[in-house]
Image (tube, rainbow, N blue to C red):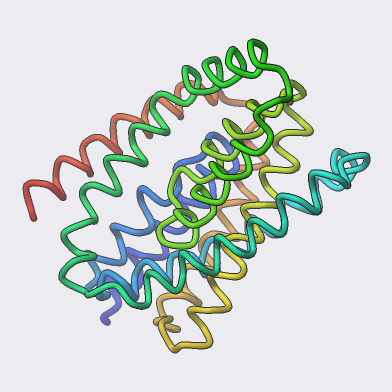
Length: 252
């Protein structure tokens, strides 16, 4: 990997860290950058998970006050996150490289749709929760296990899907939802990262470069988040993710 490639993935991680702090969607840039730099797809997916995980972990500390009083759901979802994240990571390990490469455009398309229509998804799940009350708890558990498995396997859009599951449980305080969502993302990605490290699936040089970029970007993004219109940033991410998805379909 030459200086240009290292600069590319550092810049992508810098952007990803900033976007995750402002509006989300950082993986739409960091993961493709690894592919362009020549990292094999499955290794790129695992390396991207490791690179962005410290930022998610740091966010958990920022939400510690909002987590108070949620012990029941913390224990429930944390167990599901660890199980689902581990299953998803193992599925990735046993996925053929050619098959995963063929899946990339569809995974990006799914993540793009989730990211683009997240407000509508949230409203729909809140409507369902209001209509059916708390009787669907078992359904939410089953749905969330699938979400956690997806998170361990690929992960883009995980936060939005988790918020939708929490809406189905009747959550309506966005700060408490974000706190629980962030904790679960840290657990899903954490168990997946441990699995990837233990099985030698990480490209360490790109990973370390990207961790540095993501930390700097995340710090800078948090600092400017209150000064800019996050909605405009989100719209830009939507259009860029659509373009990247189309590019991967054409490239495939």
